[in-house]
Amino acid sequence: MDSTFPENIGKVVEVVSAYGPFLDEGFCWNVRASMPLKGEGDIDGTVMMCTEGFIDDSQLRPISGVPMHDDVTDEVSA
Image (cartoon, rainbow, N blue to C red; front, side):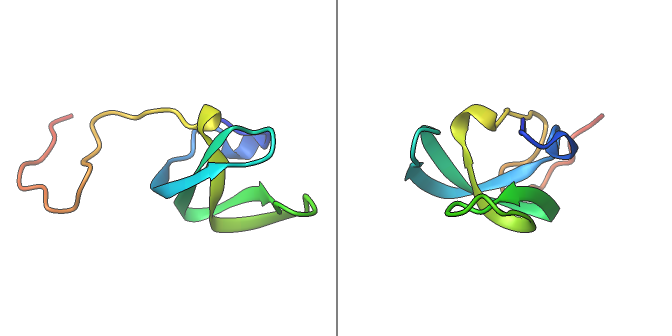
């Protein structure tokens, strides 16, 4: 992912569901992270650490070679 917080750049998040449009940020997605990431409160902009939240589509970057579901029977070779 891209981010306004440098420490979040390149972190992997799971897209959980569609959030929808938010203010002037465009379309957003509900996401979950395996470790806390820095984020801003949607009402007052308070900076906090969180593992769930939403992010605008323009900040997400696709990754490849990662299984899309948990029932993978074959391993991915490196």
